[in-house]
Image (tube, rainbow, N blue to C red; front, side, top):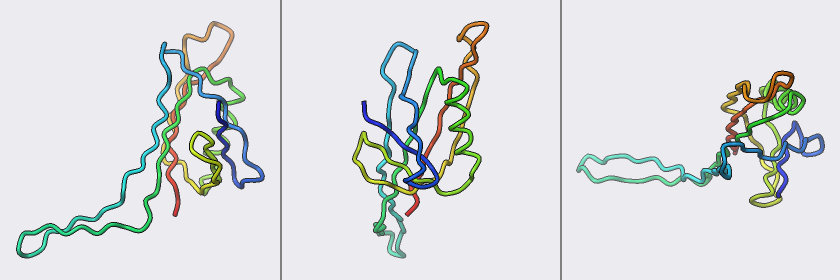
Length: 128
């Protein structure tokens, strides 16, 4: 399984927990490569497109059954509210600058009476 790192800098990045999914199937790992295009309609009604030079990526990561310590580490990264260094070895070894644009935690209630587990979804947008 490939490793994913996230942190304030590449040197201080932490290894993110492995993707654990309990719903009976493999988790999705969507990576959005949508091109940035501006569309304008000219006076004669014809469309004109402006393709931007940079096309930032978006990653949506989801976990189930995170331990309290794993969740706390991810919550601490979210609390910085700054640009972060991100490496996704599922794609390549390139370090990218990202921001956390969505952070959706939920307690996982089926973890047992003495264990606290978390479900978490985060969205990372590349900063160019």
